[in-house]
Image (cartoon, rainbow over all chains, first blue to last red; front, side, top):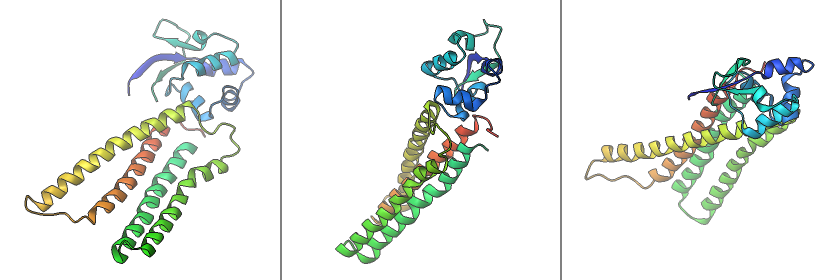
Amino acid sequence: MHDSPITNRIRRLRFDHGEMTQQELADKVGVTRQTVIAIEAGKYAPSLPLAFRIARVFHTSVEDVFQYGDGQASSDTQTQAP
Amino acid sequence: MNKSQETSLVLMILMPLCALIPGSVAVWLVYTQGAHLRPLLMFTLVMILGSLFWGVPAVLQRVHKGRKVHADERDLLIYKNCVVAAHIVLWLYFAVVCLVAWWLAGPEGMVSVHMMPLVLVGAVALFVLVEYLAAFIQYGRGGDDA
């Protein structure tokens, strides 16, 4: 199990969008709440289609939600493979 | 422990029993009564009854009906990892069984063919045990959903 350099700021975006709950986000992107929890906690790196769906919910780009490497400073969580 | 882990834990205990109990009864029926029509029909009946236990996931899915999404890409990935882990252990099991039988019987010894169906039943039980143990471990990495 290797650490992935992918980070995300889903938690912050959820709170910026009317304190959206994890279940609401999960329903909107078509996954289980467990998966949203795992992504937020950096335990699971989502597929590209799921990453786009998440970004679309927040009306932003994928790169604004997920960052690769340490080039972006706005990251909250480091993601690793499941 | 999250809900997925609870489900995996229940299945990890239930599924090997579902393989061991009907499988052992079926093998015992053929051993004691021979491969005639009546024991073979009983064998089939036991296997059909045993196969009903495989509907447990569907029952659990109905229990969790409130949730809109039952499974997603992460579940699929975890399931694939579980099957791979179970296959690896299955091959190791067969290798160990072959070597142990060879070691116990010795160069001039023989192994009864009655061992073969029991080895198969054990393989099925071990496969499902490892499969759900792997699921239990992997779902634990997702974090608590409390």
